[in-house]
Image 1 (spheres, rainbow, N blue to C red):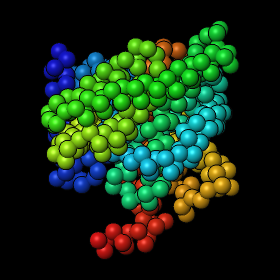
Image 2 (cartoon, rainbow, N blue to C red; image 1 turned 45 degrees about the vertical axis):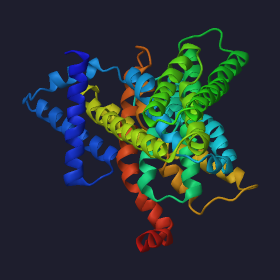
Image 3 (tube, rainbow, N blue to C red; image 1 turned 180 degrees about the vertical axis):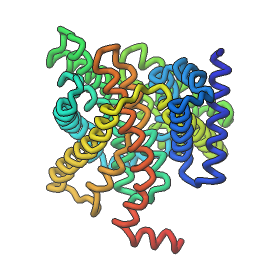
Length: 420
């Protein structure tokens, strides 16, 4: 099949699942689409086990032609990050800067080692071969929370504003930090001889700091263009060019594309919205990026749900995946709890902050994409399978119940929203 035909099939399925969710399930669109895709995929696999082939091989062939890693990390992600960053107020982010910085750096590194150590122990008990360095690699790719999943769920969860800013802000930045940690550990795992403290520091500066600087430069350039135009069609095109050109440039000069686009999105969404746009431009731009966000989110989560058709599951790996869910939640609780305990010495946190930060730390497509980017080593299949299981649980179970947890911790907020 040609690329256009494959894209058309995926888009038709996404539209169909969105329609069924809207008419029948009434879940948030992303969760509903992924849930239906997962159910359909499991039904196809189950029928295949019973000898009834309803096109599993054809669907699997289509999915195998989609490079998930390339499609997400070098395609959809730039648009989704920009759409998310545009709607976060810089004042809110600044007020939570220390909490976000601590969670996105120390929290990610701590979680990486907790997940890596416990996963290595559990896989050993299950007699599944995996060296410690690759268990750490799994820890690195699963520890960052996914901004695409997190921001989509927070829209309907009713989380208090300060906590919402912490969770959303952390998710926007920690994936960039997580990718740097992932790259360092992967280099070690593949036997890189030049991995030293100096090279690690240089890589961090190039990726994280370099990405932030690039985002500021391209954001300011786009801001100056927006100030000199009063035509929303042209201004939408400028933001599209900013996202696509900025991410491509970041890839070319080896800095963090995600961080660059987040910084640019924050600048356009705050300074640009306030000083460089007319009222009609703000409305049209918001509508455009909200629609782009919804379409790509639905398509991404449909793909995640359908990926089960090409996953080589075994009984032991299913058990390992279920254990990985518990390990990942524990590591999130321990790293967040430690960070909050330390920061409570000089700042206050909302009641139940650790519970909500733990349960609201959703994993998503970025973790799956990183797992699929691992070269063909013996541990790759194990890492891909347990990553997929953790991500599906995170999006479906945590995403569907986060709002209920918030209502239980903050019943007065629920009462106020009902009163409104």
